[in-house]
Length: 385
Ligand SMILES: [Zn+2]
Image 1 (cartoon, rainbow, N blue to C red):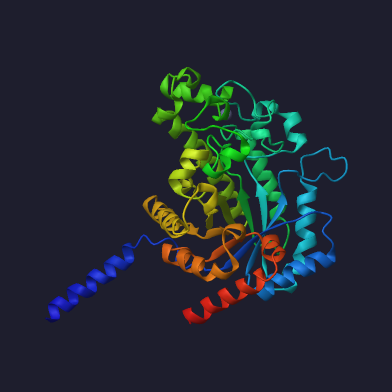
Image 2 (cartoon, rainbow, N blue to C red):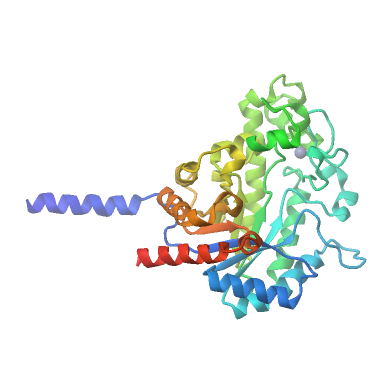
């Protein structure tokens, strides 16, 4: 009997040592995405951060470089002065209300004219040979994408990260749009955007720039432009997944090197992400937190998919031996006020470490939503204790 007890104990110890659970040690927090502007007034910052504190939000991901970046003055370098100003303006209010502040920036999708004018050849090209700078992809002015295979783009983004990381008191840097443009849009958007995407078509399939073609040909002897059905070519898919994973992982390593928390917003489930936007985020390294945006109605998913997709993400990270902590992102527009608690339970059962809401503005816009959220979070904390 004693022997059996000893063996059981040994098994338990070995199992706990081998556990692939992703960083359960990282604190589970309540997060929210928020958009910042250089013109945001002190009164508005106060209103936003005091509301966040009252609701029970621990950390804000503040968008300081987005689709329409602000330009301050006539700059001769590429320094993103507007992004720096936004963070510096918001920081005292975040600190006053005990909110952790993270700078949220767009990453592969970069629209600033300075870089576009200086190096148009560094931007992505589609299967028809058209640069994303020369067409208006999905009729969106802001759809301008950096090629992840260009080391100059990586250096450019590391530089943007470094100038933000100099701000004392900033907790972390959050990478958004760290992917290719949509080869296929999330399913519920096809009709409103007027596209038929029963498969991948060349005008939406990127990156066929000279550098990517050269590198792939060097590896395989094949010019991807010659592939009849590029999506079915595993090597070509893998090449693009790997190029973006490398780009993401290197920027994240720089964020960590600078002593900041690194995080990324990614598409909903690992498989959909690889398919729709060539984003193999389970293999994005050096991230502390990965936030899958489970805006489930855009995928025509039933509510319970929030739990299932959360679990798929947690399992994919574990399988890839990725120690990033997964925190599910919910869209307030898809989560009715009276059902917030239910959704929190689903993400928790799926294995999410904390919760993130898109967006702070969305929470405050709808009458009563902030109170419902506060009550749901409070109920959760009460139950957990
Ligand atoms: Zn390329």
